[in-house]
Length: 196
Image (cartoon, rainbow, N blue to C red):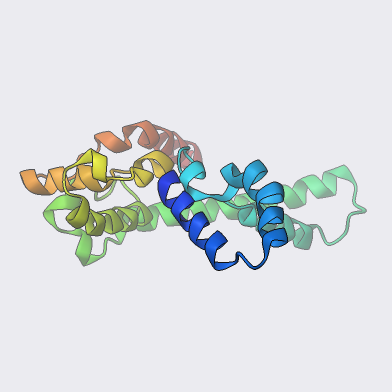
């Protein structure tokens, strides 16, 4: 499931089939029921071809649904009471989002104060910087070669991927805001909306 490329997925699938060749019915079931019909929904090589901001399951929706049910207490309410309850819940979520944005602007861990992150501080969330930090680790093995990079961070989250970071490191320049502009514009609009 976590194979970043289709080639690696096929290699791992072959290894699985070899290891469990004593169970041909189960392997046939796996292929017919899951892999042939649904692999594009849960195998990384397919889902990482699209922007998903690391939301690859329904856990977040299910969590919010459970929270909403907890706030509503009962399914037998009139519309107005339900509306007020949902409105209050959404206002709490907006406060949490504002708090998170403010924390990203004011609390910068020391490890992000180096030259690579210099331009990003105050504009990019701590979470995004953590993801970039992981890509920095990958950039050591990938280098500035796009062919060796899987481009997962760029494709799924809109963040610079390992080969881009390797180029910035090679040139001794900070990571620019330009890779973030496409998504930063919507973040700025969101911040303006939330603060108004």
